[in-house]
Length: 376
Image (cartoon, rainbow, N blue to C red; front, side, top):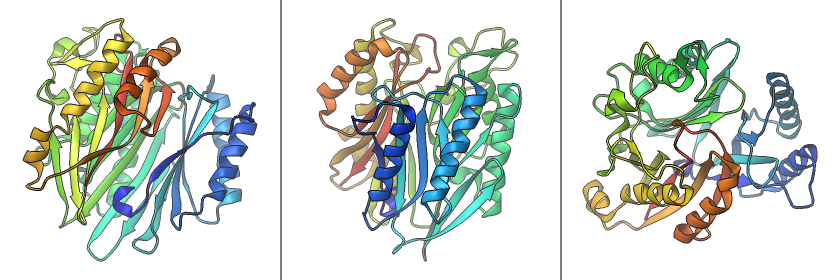
């Protein structure tokens, strides 16, 4: 929400709260006390769920609580990924109403907010599908809903610059079809050749315990926008992977993951880099198998290459100072948390970060990290 003169902040329940309900209520109370002069337009809640029924119940509960607090419509996502330091974690997204006119765009399976000023438009939202019995149909449906929202406000699909793809049981199978591969196939079909010129969005593809498929997105339309894909010289671009690292031979169709390692954006004199979900991959091969400390080190090195001096010199003629804005760290196995946290902090110190339990898109990957870099 940097371009909206706003922010994206995380809200942890206070230590005295023990039960899930207490922690939820405390997060909501903290949200009501935020007085920044900005307005909340989207809330994400990260919480565990052990069944579809409990997920639906909790989703409805949070929706009701949020509607009781806010007069305006708030976009809401419940992401079934348990935080490592509490039972529930809230993420609040802000904008500056003095700069942007905001209009809600709502459909049955999600929605977005369209922000406009005299020169530019920004569309931020999410869509979800979990009514179908398999990942393939949920993936197709969620992309249909994404296109519906974009078309309703005359945005092209290739205006999407950042995407988060949450996939229930990402490494699971429906028959012979792996869930992540089915999602990638649906994405490839919808994208077609629309992104040939600008490159693909920066993106994260990550597992969750329930909820089908959720896509969160940021799209931008502006004649003043500069948007450039960034490659890591140590990694093969994911959209050019060989079939050797895609899902097993049992899958009938195997298309590559369509995203860039990072994306540089410049608008209104503000500059940032969206860092995609990044893991311990060199070339296209997983490195540090079974070693969480090594995988974290390699992941962080991969991230740092995306805003190295060489990269920044190519992006802008100015001398840019990178400031890492925030990070999410996804951890496959809770037992690896102390090691991964220690390694992360040795590089980034007190940088705002949240640690979340989530399955990652390869069986041998233990950690994935995403974030943004603000350039000043």
